[in-house]
Image (cartoon, rainbow, N blue to C red; front, side, top):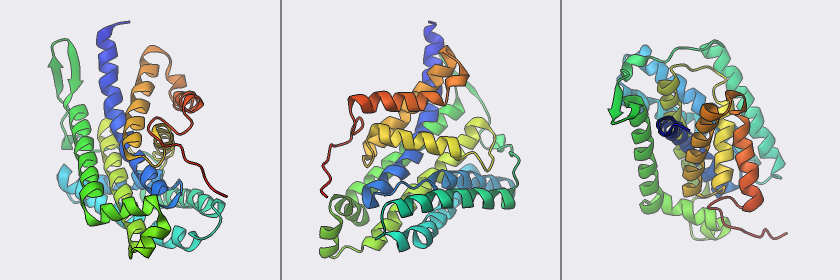
Length: 295
């Protein structure tokens, strides 16, 4: 095995894994608050990529303002989705919001096809001109570093929000005990909307970063990454924010190593193989806590 190829694929995996981690954070935060798997989250990621694309191409905005616009619009979509599709079913059996989430995913895909067209669009490459970087025998690109750095900055901001802000503390309280938090005067609806907003903003950022990484976007781009990010969240321990980050990086690295030293045919299958292997050893995920659900 050539160690230079190995390092190059690890760098590729870290760049891709950082986007998986951003998407997985949305899954794990929503599940931690209301025990819902939001399968429409991958479509928020897809819409975020389109919002950024049009901000750059139609309005000629630089990358950072486009990123902010995309995150803001995705926040609005996420809040509307929670308000219209999920909130009325909050007291229903769990299967009802789960099916609704799948329906919302298909609906957003269809809307994207109607509004944006079904063909892929080349993401504008001029926002980050490609430049090779060599560190000795190690080769990487400026885009990989920028994607990784942006993802890390967003994760740090999320950590500071959850750890030190009033709404972040309310999120942690609701995730621990919903009813106790309500009795303490916490506005549960506001906290849940805020959680969807945070997750949607991170997913939109991931959509733009993936557009930069692969230079193409399409209405179906949220299906596989959304599914893999969900696997990453479960792998790290669903409901655990550090677990989602760890799971995302592991997924990205494993996927790239399989492509480099195996076959691209198994690229998607490796996600589920890794998940099954880890859950056989540790059913709660790598950083998840085992809990007993009372009936």
